[in-house]
Length: 233
Ligand code: G3P
Image 1 (cartoon, rainbow, N blue to C red):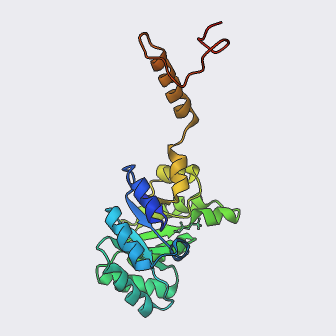
Image 2 (image 1 turned 90 degrees about the vertical axis):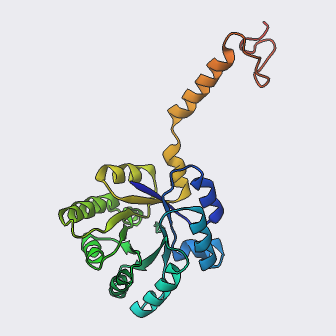
Image 3 (image 1 turned 180 degrees about the vertical axis):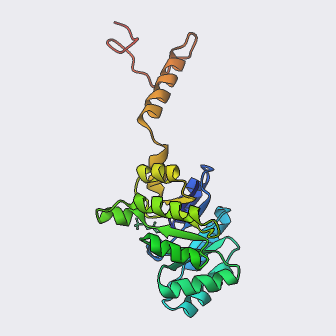
């Protein structure tokens, strides 16, 4: 399963790219607006940092406008994936951009029928938003199960399932078990994935044992004096 970062903050992307686990990046108009930067510049900088798909979303509402905007975005770098919304004009734009050889991520997917239409239009990726379904009291990951199962039954539809609106490590765990192609994660969720209390405690114990071994130099940070563990009594 590929891991994408869901952010338009270049400094964050640079920091996490160093972990060696980031396969791509997704952005959306809200994230770009939050960065306060010029969209095209941000996309170019991200492409220079991460050697993988970088989703950049169009804001036009009609197919012709989406295609024109999509072509401009795709010209920034060969790794740009044009993101279009899952509406009829977006489906038209998807078919046109794919005919031009441009990769397309169809976003704002909330149902299996919508995902099927995106796949039929030739989408490279479809992005179901699991967190926003959870927000409504539904099970977002059940939708991933449905889409993965249905697309697997029709190998001619080679659209990849990109799990979006990911809020926690449990979403990622279930996405992996379901065989989703990719997840896109806000940096804080990537941080949650690596953290485990037993890893932290285990490392602390290993280092304490190492520092207590025979002949080890005294640890200048260790407490000393009467009453301190290992100190004079
Ligand atoms: O990039 C789309 C996406 O992942 C949105 O997430 O948390 O705003 O629902 P969220």
